[in-house]
Each structure stands twice: as structure tokens, then as C-alpha cells.
Image (cartoon, rainbow, N blue to C red; front, side):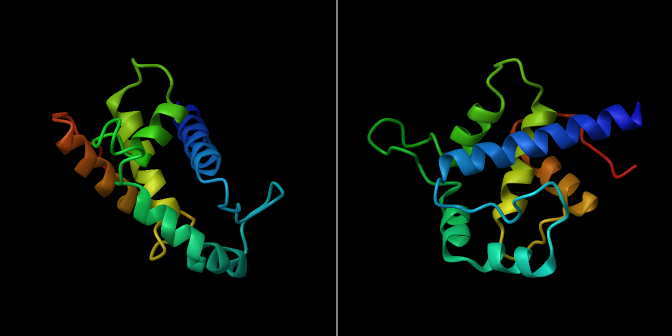
Length: 135
């Protein structure tokens, strides 16, 4: 069951990253092949001007005239989770992944406790009573 859960999280991470790169076309992926990202690749990606710009846009409206509350993060999540019945835990996890991936102060490899902390923050904002734990 734990392997299945890990695979599900891995799929969500990939969907979020693909959605980010589809929305921010100028953002170059830190790796090209199916391998671990090197420290230099990570540093170049995190320190690039485009990554910082994309990170700062996450909470900005896509189109202020159309809907000032519909942000780039909403757009990325809608692209990653097209099913309106997607569980809020998955959405909160996706939000945490998006912020972590583009945050220049965080590494590309996500620290589980930081992700869960961020997830719980988003779940609280969505009024979800059950929270995640680090177990």
C-alpha cells in the first residue's frame, strides 16, 4: 500500500511539474533525461531569473479583467487535476509541490516534513478538518 501511495504522489509531482512547464513556456526543466538532478543543474534552475519570475507569479491573476481571483496556481492545478472531484488532499499536495518546485530558497528534492507543513496550511485554508502527518 505504501508503494502505491508513493507512486501516486510521484505521479502528482510529475503532473504538477508538467503543468508548470506548459504554462511557463520559457522555464527550462532542470534535467533532460530520466536521472537525478545534479547540484549545479538545481542551482542554475533555482537561481535563474525565469524561475524567480514564475515563482512570484503563482499567486497573481492570470487575467485581472476576466477573474482577478483566478491565479496562475489555480490554472496549473486545473491543468494537473482536470477532474472536479479530485480530493482536496491531492490539490493541497499539488499546491505544496508547485511552490516548492519554483521556490528559489528550497531544493528540488522535497523534504517530506516541509511538504506536509505546507499541505496542512493549504488544507486549513480549504477548511478541511483532517490533516496529514509525517508518519
